[in-house]
Length: 138
Image (cartoon, rainbow, N blue to C red; front, side, top):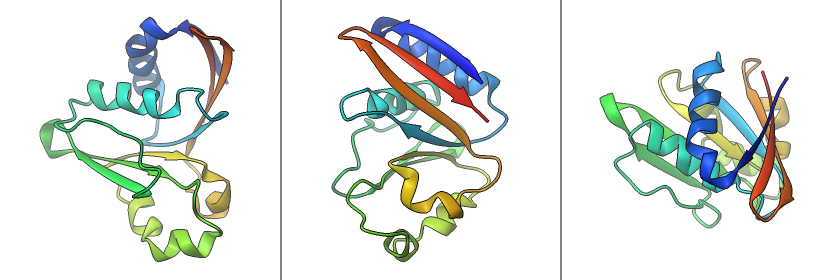
């Protein structure tokens, strides 16, 4: 496990470090509401040169972004789903096994059994208004 404590201004460097050190393209993001999960995904999107503005997918559940080199990023927020079957109904299995895409999943607990073995896990802890700690494992 890698643990990184950072100031919010350092988030782009932290996101770059995670992408550089990760052997996978599938990430779960855990942390309390307001911890910065979507903000971290936005930093990943910036590094991957997203052509779109990364926003919270709370209401649409899945956002898809086109990035450099025709690469796709999927950002899922499963907070509003009631069970794993709803995730299957929205096509989560097709998304999880897209080997060319980066996949970032918030509130992944409902689909734990569907996640591929090579999924990386990110947990964000709020230290104070401007400081966070990320625990990153794969």
